[in-house]
Image (tube, rainbow, N blue to C red; front, side, top):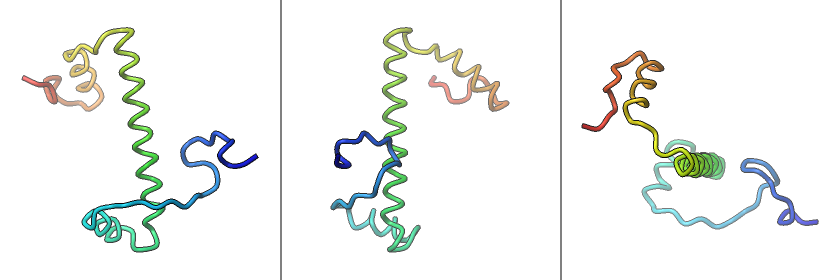
Length: 93
């Protein structure tokens, strides 16, 4: 059995090398933050976060198909309760 036969969740399994093309500015910004030897770990974490965001977006879309979109006023009220802020903050006018 090879690694390709196993379905590892994001962040698990053996490391595998690939070639990635980035713009010079993006690569420079990453190296400024993490140094030359931290680029792979930085990109791994960024990819994991993007997978989480994509999965969350899919979950929300599925929920909306079943239940309809969330009521903006109810969302604003709940946000205000969580943050202690104005229930109108963050709503479109």
